[in-house]
Image 1: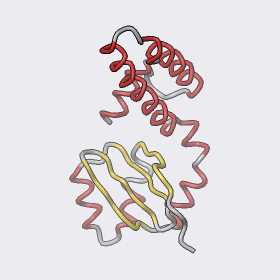
Image 2 (image 1 turned 90 degrees about the horizontal axis):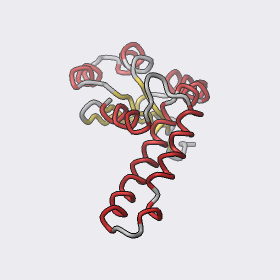
Image 3 (image 1 turned 30 degrees about the horizontal axis):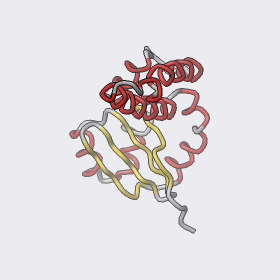
Length: 149
């Protein structure tokens, strides 16, 4: 959640993320912080390079959790959570990463350690996740590995 709020603040986004507004904000920030604009001062150029990286990372991240992006991938997500099983789990801070047997990997934001422990210790992990995690937390597709044949 901290990461989401940090990037929203950087882009001046409040509430839900609108892709068109995000894109406009991204372009304005890139123009402002482009390293080539700060060639005279080495310190300012280094700061601009760092800001450019943050802006690019933030844009990709916010784009991946925007309602429009989620809606576009909803059929695939629904198919994964209904037909694939949990293959691997990683939990760090408030981020839960779940890799499914179909090769898809999703990140869930705001999952605390207590809920993660309940998931790991559940008799039926898949059912617990369906009821308590899959549709309860902000998520994004983080990567996809080669599908098993």
